[in-house]
Image (cartoon, rainbow, N blue to C red; front, side, top):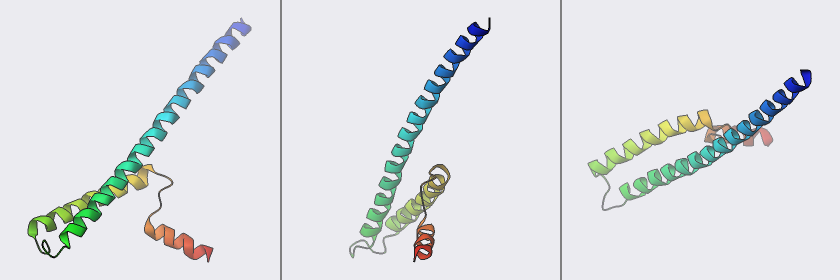
Length: 102
């Protein structure tokens, strides 16, 4: 009876470990996808800023609103990034770390 229970327990543990490994793989994949998404949004924001500051478009109200909207979206995404990415450091945190290292 005990041997049967040990075998069943062993099988369940193997299945449980396999399941955890699969979840970790998915989370790592999701994290990589989020990182690419964050970088794309930052590049988009920089691109809009460059276009807005071109002499031809400077002061255009539509581009100005688009720039403000993209900055607002980027701020919201950075909050999400800080929550879900434990390795992410803000610029202020990076500066603090560099100051402590000096």
